[in-house]
Length: 116
Image 1: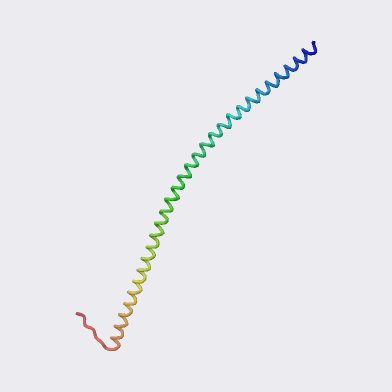
Image 2: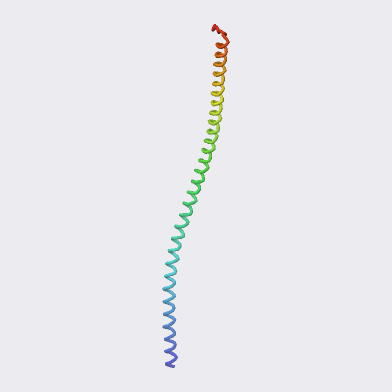
């Protein structure tokens, strides 16, 4: 009967050691889980901040796109106006040359002009 008690006592000691080991591991896992939960909160906060920044950047892109479109239209209008001015300048030069040609031909032919 003494052997039976010793075996039982050894078994109880072994079970107690296993329970203590499991308790330590459980505490360690609990600590790791709390740390991970903290990291999870940090990540969720970062995600929210990133989403807000993305939204802000999208608004900025939309605004800049509108401004670029407006500048493009103004540029097209400026180009058209420049082309119109060049055409007027060309016409003006042609008229000046035509007038000089008329005067030169008249002088050559002996025609006189009177200004009233």
